[in-house]
Length: 359
Picture 1 (cartoon, rainbow, N blue to C red):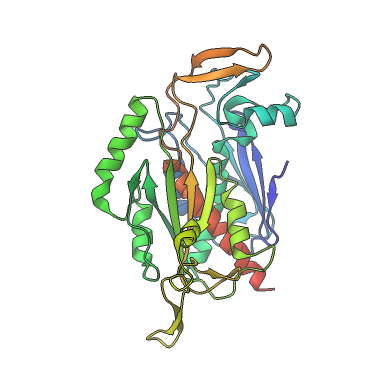
Picture 2 (tube, rainbow, N blue to C red):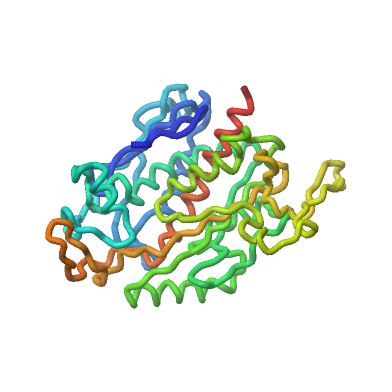
């Protein structure tokens, strides 16, 4: 399995959705980094199930740091974070019963039927909890360097929020959005968004969403073309989040409808004497390297296809379609809990690039 990631900041993730637990090992953390447990707990609370807008599964998501931390700071050894699974009601899952839109079938074939099929096992969204915990450490480290990250729903079930401006994103707004149950730049959209999610839940359906992330105050030149370009490193972690099916930077697929004259991203001299970039169509990355402009990246989450009580199953043994089953533990929109995972992996990717730049 491809459970390892990174060059300087090396991650190894383990566990299953309905097994005894899950966790992550972070190797390469510089010694002396303060482990802000309050920030980690706050980030995990944003990801946790159990609520009116998310899955009803109840997990306290208590992180246990069992190595690599001494007196509240990293000690240079691999830092290991473990979560114990508690609400492991797995009666809705049966061996050989394939859910549409999930990895059950390819996992069954790849691992010769030995895979843990409950809730996706090692492939399930439960493993974003360790990613969020690790990302909170990276985010705190970045903030000490005045680098700030935040996300909002630029699209949710067809509802559109105001996208990030090209070069005027404030740290205050990024912090504010972290405190929102549904982070939206336009506050008047909140009631409509909640109504859309409520209708989806009550009609046993689900919604897709586009999460737009931003990082500000990045130094110029992070990334290593060609194969370790800034886009490559960030995308590799974004696609590790279950449910993400597309990633774009800046204008992204919108470039297809632009002329070169409109998408040129001209340089200019800022009032402080530095170099600025007009429009920032490229999302803060030029030639695979950070340009100093705000880094803007969007990730699309598909609507979950496991729907409470209405999802048909296919039995690979008998070849028969089975009657819909399942309780009320599906997410009406997985991006509601997935958004904080986007923040987390972006922080980890940026920390990796910064550590590599110090060689």
